[in-house]
Amino acid sequence: MRPSLSKSEEELMNILWRMHQAPMRDLIEAYPDPKPAATTIATLLKRMRDKGYVDFKKNSSARLYFPLVDKEVYFSGQINTLIRDFFDDSAGQFASFFTKRTNLSKDELRALRKIIDAEINKK
Amino acid sequence: MRPSLSKSEEELMNILWRMHQAPMRDLIEAYPDPKPAATTIATLLKRMRDKGYVDFKKNSSARLYFPLVDKEVYFSGQINTLIRDFFDDSAGQFASFFTKRTNLSKDELRALRKIIDAEINKK
DNA sequence: CGTATTATTCTACAAACGTAGAAAGAATAT
DNA sequence: ATATTCTTTCTACGTTTGTAGAATAATACG
Image (cartoon, rainbow over all chains, first blue to last red):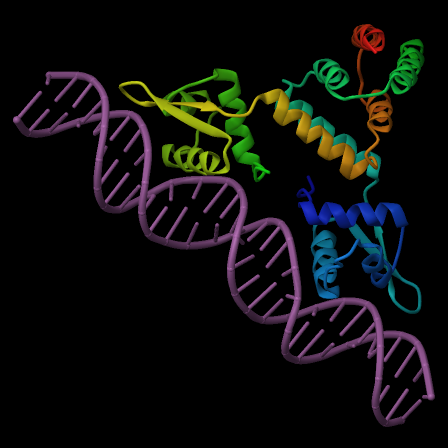
């Protein structure tokens, strides 16, 4: 089991997911101001490599860093943790909580219903 | 803005939510084996008080600790953070991802649809 | 090539966390 | 009332995190 990412590692991970693959300079570039020091990013990248979330390939010049874990996969993990830790492992309970609590617009709710219907039909 | 809870603080918070209010001995009791040392719990409670998530009242004998933040409130916060950090702040996007990704049973999906319909009607 | 620039590693350090012993204070049991 | 037990605070210590300077290695530019 991979150690989990810290907050600021997650932030960088998000940038990586958006860019798919990038050299460090572009990663820094992608940060909102105030951008962290280059060495800070470097440290994070190193730690994330150690944790197994990132790797790089070298094509001539600078390293191209890229994520080793899909956003979807990572994300489902997060949700599942939340569900396990707070909802007694019941996704249904979580879902209903979520639906009531989040302020989805009427349109979003309709869209969601559509998806659910489709899912029901798949089963 | 309250500082956020760490993993082990969250665990204790969950116990508190379940028990509503309890003296330390009962909190320890509620932990799964191997239970942490009493002083560990005490430290956590202290830190959680400092962060504003817990308080206690004294009625004669030992302190009764209780949560200052509702599970629902805390929890919505967590989800919103997730949505903000990973879904570009779109709850709809999150919802559809969630629905597709989680293995809800047919019944759970039906129940969820019911809730959604109710929500749609409210709007 | 040789120097300027950028990338990477090393080292560091303060704050937060996980965990708990030692000490002190409070409750209780006999 | 005193010994025993439980609670709370204090202190501590190793680990992880956030952050970045100094040093070094790699690359680019003239």
